[in-house]
Image (tube, rainbow, N blue to C red):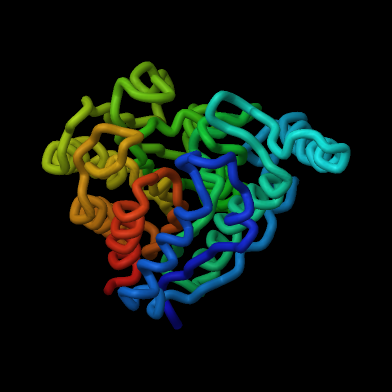
Length: 317
């Protein structure tokens, strides 16, 4: 049995938000190519991500919001048939095409299927190579390239459908996971720890009043040594004390020094180190159970190499 599952779906490539948009289908191609040429992909068990059910998405999102997205998607099909535009704008950075609804369902479905497989003992852990990403998606609105909050849906699913009592969410994207905090803030069954650049979009994360949130805002140009030190001092003791039964990771790689959407200074070795620390906690308290979902990362070379480093640790390579 392979210890690490790898979930993706072709629908995740068909969602796109226009020429030149950084959150593009080529991100998944770059990851796939890197895992292929390095041989890392051979150590993973690939699974095709199913669509999430709307009932499961409602664990984290408002029913009317879900219905509005579905309606926008259906309306877009009709508009295109009538010669109208092929995208509908959600916010200045985020838009839908006719494939976005399906891609978002498969992205959330990957996280749920991975959760099922890890809890069943089929894998120790899993990585979900999916898009659109999720951690800016709030309970009742899309933003920041995100539609459904894949990690928040999966965390609630583990609690509600599988009966776990304590789960942790770890977010190391360069941007604060405001949507995840919006959904999970105040839920004492969840501990969320995050590190991100501040100030930077979405300009949040420094004023949380929820006791289950531990945010580490970092100034621009912070390098790996300082991030590691902060994680050692703050995250790890809280995670140890919390004793999570499963860990969900919002794996954003845009804090890499080569990524233009942020100004942080992490490199592949830092992502490997962070993943190792998380994995040690998971093995001590959760039987190793982890599900990691792709978030940001927009320099294609840096993204691919960073995902490789992350997955190598997950798979004990």
